Image 1 (cartoon, one colour):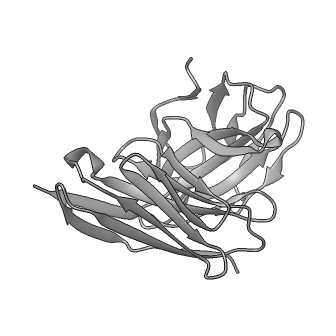
Image 2: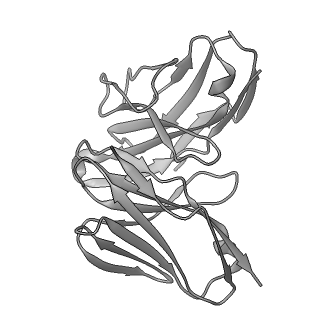
Length: 109
Length: 114
């Protein structure tokens, strides 16, 4: 079957660094997405990895290991506005996204 | 640019009634999707369309139907609503053929079936 696992909730302190992990099992693989979703709003795109390695984009970085079926999203210099849910999604062989349930990130001052 | 619009923003519907959720995009994307999002669960694909004139079933298609008469519009119809269809519904689009797989989401429709 197809499955995405990520922690339900994480707490971090403003100014710190947090890493959100995601493991996936899909029928075929065409890349791994991370989206941010603030409460009551639509998901918005953060990153897309299809090759192994780390992609950095400002305060956010995303890592992929295809052999391990593993990805993480790294958020640096946390700000209060980073409080949101972070959704991991893997693209299968039909180019459909399989979504995790999301990780709710709580930032404390 | 508006991107993707959805209507209505929210709706309370009596069980057994029918309803159409509207979705329009102005990005000329080929692919469009309908998802539902329930607490504790990931986004689940209901139906999709890779191009105008074609549609396909997703993970949870029962009780829903879609049509794709043109590139811009992708309405979702509930023929006879049931309480288990209470959810937040998101429409999304992407320009898949170009190799850009990023999906853009509408603001969502919050539906309550009583």
